Length: 330
Image (cartoon, rainbow, N blue to C red; front, side, top):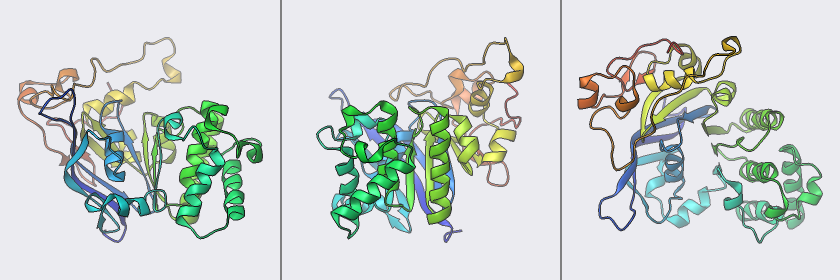
């Protein structure tokens, strides 16, 4: 099992300070996560559930007010959380790359996109400027950017949101990393380009053995590309299963609610199901199960006690006192 594991996150706790308060708000609460080699793992949940913070914690890219309080992130057996920033710079962009959620704030506005991609190549590999430029143009073409030679000398503001997103994807993939963390990589793209990008990711995985952590709201993308899925809610993993089990037999009420919210051809004219309420404030978490205020099946025990993450069999984990396998039966 250890030989087949590329990254294992154990007991990750991440908190943030805000508003001059002494107490800190915990955004990631004891997350365990395993990414096997040559596999794609999905991380899903609503905004504010801690998905991106988990990824930024692993990468060592938290904001100044963020802090990893506990946990390990074992990458090929090496704890990333124990490395210095200098040591992490050798890994980031080379062995681990990340596609960020908002390209306009991630790309440098005063440098051309070609220079930004070339910089990563020159920093982590021994190639000439001409070779770096050629590789950049090739990757821009692969991610579906028209006239890549012309786009190479463009600045980020000269590109549309979709093109900037494709530049970010190309930058993350150009060095063929061991692990690619993709944070909502297809949000700004139309369905045809989305399909092209997913094919490109699968090709990278097949050719280079790259593992992928796919952070997304899009359950269609999860079904298309993921092998295993973790569902996060309010900073915790509430369910984990292989992709087939999750779509056929999801057991947590939150996961079942997400599945029931998907539009269906056969349900023409019917109102879409929605999970009532919102994700709780980090400083005002419920005492028991964090999902209990929004759960249609919560009882007094749920409101009072915190359920453990239990194995339902074959590695299917669920954080619920009364798990009910049944997919989208809500």
